Length: 91
Image 1 (cartoon, one colour):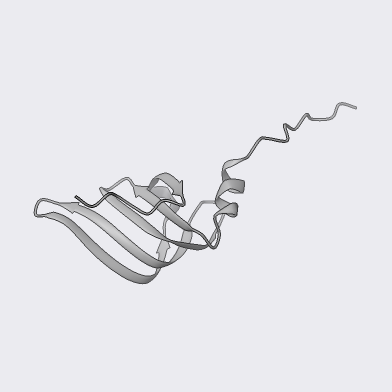
Image 2 (cartoon, rainbow, N blue to C red; image 1 turned 90 degrees about the horizontal axis):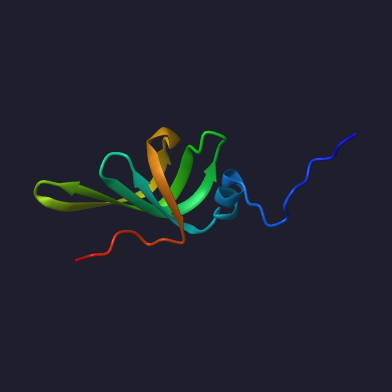
């Protein structure tokens, strides 16, 4: 019987997201929005519940910033996750 070799330094994507629970995370969305918040939880589809959220949106008039207490985020619209990120730089 063969045993699967597991590299002890290997980190799977959902394991990384799990390590971020309770921490700040910067999320870049497909639709010109960026979201920064504290990750409360997620599911296998990377739908996320965030608190203390700041949403940054690029509009023709400039950057719009919206603050929210809590947010349920659909994982289908996520392009990139940045653990510990604090959002886009303010110019």
